[in-house]
Image (cartoon, rainbow, N blue to C red; front, top):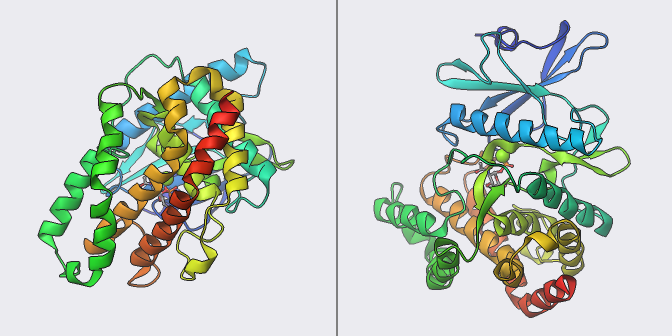
Amino acid sequence: MEINDIAKQFAFEGEMVSIKPLGEGFINDTFVLKTEGAAPNYILQRKNHIVFPDVPGMMDNIVKVTAHMKAKIIQAGGDPMRETLTVVFTKEGLPYYYDKPNYWTMCVFIEDSVTIDNATSLDLCFKGGQGIGRFQKMLADYPDPLNETIKGFHNIRFRYEQWDDTLRRDKFGLVKTVQEEIKWVEDCRQQMLDFWKMVEDGSLPMRVTHNDTKLSNVLFDKEGNVLCMIDLDTCMSSTALNDVGDALRSYTNTGAEDDKDLSRVSMDISRFKAYVGGYLSEMKDSLNDCEKEWLAFSAIYITFEQVLRFLMDYIDGSTYWKIQYPTHTLVRTQAQYALLQSMEAQYDEMKQIVADLCK
Ligand code: GN1
Ligand code: MG
């Protein structure tokens, strides 16, 4: 089916005048649909069904959490059309359109907004921290269980099971070529599983979290204030720390996620401090002592997990993330490992900063 015809399955307002691709997502394909006159514009997305095996479950989560947030925003006198996403349903009343094998979804385009790829100022880091803090806070009393739309997404025990399978399969004979990188993952096994035990025994509680908190998933207004979190595809139950760690992984990196020049990659401790400051300005009173104690470690945890996930995908034939050249995901692995090492070298300082901010 043509893209125009897909769009017409949705009950959007106004007359469509154009539909064009937007950006270069690593996972989904995104289009902007423009309408005439006063009607809003829209975002149409083809969801990657390899990454998201349960799009109906995912959309069920998104519809419910955005409804919960809208009620909170209205209560606080905010603008529910700008401070969270608005899902557009199909003419048949579903939050997705299924055109085998693809699932399509639509939401309202929030005007006068920007996304930012690099944390160029400390103010931006602070505001990003506030953004995810507010998101978690609005959802702290969300009552229903959410669908687990990607199994074991930030669960390192599950990731190690996938990892062991990947090495055992060695589908493309690549294992022998990445022995050094494999050792990085093996050397951390015990430490990471020990950390995860605190989630399994409830010391680190499950909350409603975003799970993909990199800077480009925060929408800002033109003045640089946070409007809302976007890309709610992975919104499900996880730990508060996973959101913080994933954000720190992206905000504090002085290089790119796929930097070939590892000398550019490091963790900027001042950005760490600004982000955690923004986050704790919203969430300090909601976190338990264990969450506070392990907040700094969350950056290490998620950066490590990303090393594992990238390397696993590389060994498995680079099918998960889009690539621009054959070793792209291996380069990503190496760049994330450089970031991890920089974090480990600064871990004492990171812990001290969190302790001071929690006082
Ligand atoms: C993916 O969807 P996107 O591009 O924001 C991935 C994240 C990774 C990130 C690395 C559902 O994020 O977990 O951290 O790439 N999302 C999914 O760039 O796997
Ligand atoms: Mg995403």
